[in-house]
Image (tube, rainbow, N blue to C red; front, side):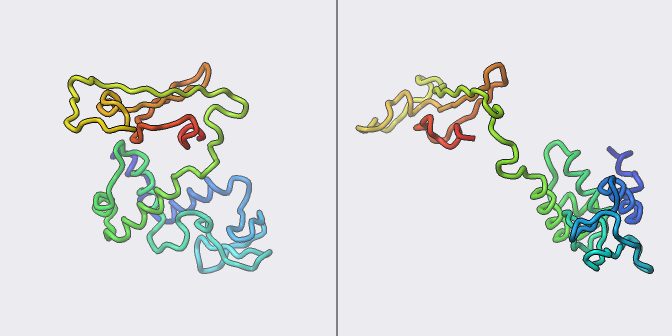
Amino acid sequence: MADALNNKIFQDANKARSWLEKLLWVGGRSCGYCGVVDESTPVKGREGYYQCRACRKQFTVQVGTVFERSHIPLNKWLMAAFLLCASKKGMSAHQMHRMLGITYKSAWFMCHRLREAMTPLKGALGPMGGEGKVIEADETYFGDTDAMAIKKPARRHREGRAQQARRGVTGRARRSGPFLPRRERNRRCTPHDPVHER
């Protein structure tokens, strides 16, 4: 990982910008405001800025990304994204501010913005098994009832002592697919529970 951090895109903001331009503008330079492709000219005296002929706005490669409207250099953003993705257990904002040499407030802002960008959109993943696939779901309780003795007596209209001491587990599986177990905090789960509707 130490060798990867010595990459030039993490050390120089201009090299980071040109790397991001090659990555995002494969089909041509597109305006971040109106989306028109290859209808822009470089702005003299402002490296990395382009003037769109269609909407007449100036833009950079950062427009429309999580790096937009930030005074933090782009190479710091790329290094922060790399560190968040490369660390197994994530990374705190304190560790980020020590490694990048920026303030804690900036590191906190960067971490939150990057984590928000990494969250999947609602409905983007689609149904669990795919369109028209059959999902089977079941629930059970597990645990040793003798080892988990309950001091309170069971009341009427409540679950029995065995179910109170055990943990509820639901499982969902696609036919000829992976099995997805999940521990349920609410033991009274039904087939119409929102978990099964995902």
